[in-house]
Length: 368
Image 1 (cartoon, helix red, strand yellow):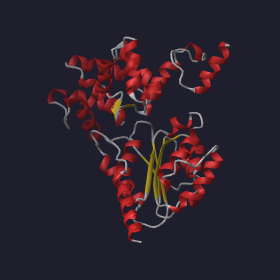
Image 2 (image 1 turned 180 degrees about the vertical axis):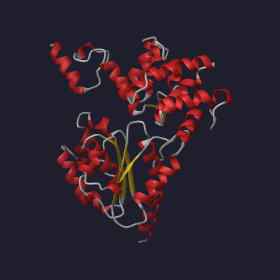
Image 3 (image 1 turned 60 degrees about the horizontal axis):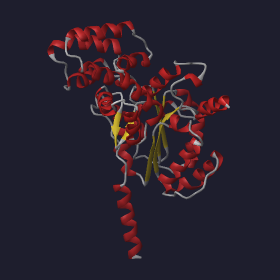
Image 4 (image 1 turned 90 degrees about the vertical axis):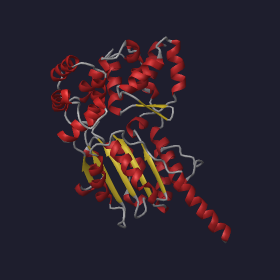
């Protein structure tokens, strides 16, 4: 009996030690108030299951908020898992089945249950996950079928469990049956927060350098309060030495002013040299979440000088390098892939890169 108690204590301690802590944001401007609002919605001390959906446009900070909340409360739960980029993962071969296997592995610590179809995975989750109090984050959900495969019904989960969903489309949350008090529309940063975040990335300080205050305020007014845009453009302005270059970039922003986030972000892409553009597009299409060593060898063979290019992409906030893997915001990924699609919108075989398995098979079939 004593041995069993000791084993349970050790297991509980290991579960807490092994909790994943997500890297949230270098400059978490405006994040505390948003986390506090989520804590009220989740109401973690209250019995009963709570499902909360965060919705808003791409680049507004939904994933950042979900990671911050996850870090704060995951230690309360027997099991927790964070599914990042569900939209991207579900497009791969047997993508939803792979996500179901991940849920079963992380929540039940079971890597051996065989799942051959989505419906089989649903049955396993319904039957077995209910026994545990869990925290699950489903990030970047783009279709209700993804929710139905992973968190289809409330009775799949035990009381006190908490499910967080992030999506660009509120309709998905409505289809899942979430009420208004179970959703949170994440808005852009206010002007004060926007200027502060831009300043951190452009100057490394909370306020602009005195001679650039007016220009900084103009840039923020033009770009709006989207954190991703402020980070990328702030990093771009960081490289510019004189106010003349700032004025030129500001004029370009005004000329390209649009609600289309990709058009705002493309200004930074356009400033890259040929090698840097090629490496950026390769990462967007093939190497997100992948180890960088293989890619670096490939780029070296192509004489792309990857060490220099990667440093530039990191400085411009176009990529991130975490744990030896490339990371990229989904808006930047989508922008990069759209650039490739525009090489030949109607004929995939003429594009420089193919990442979609269905399109790749179609092109190979047409070559036969």
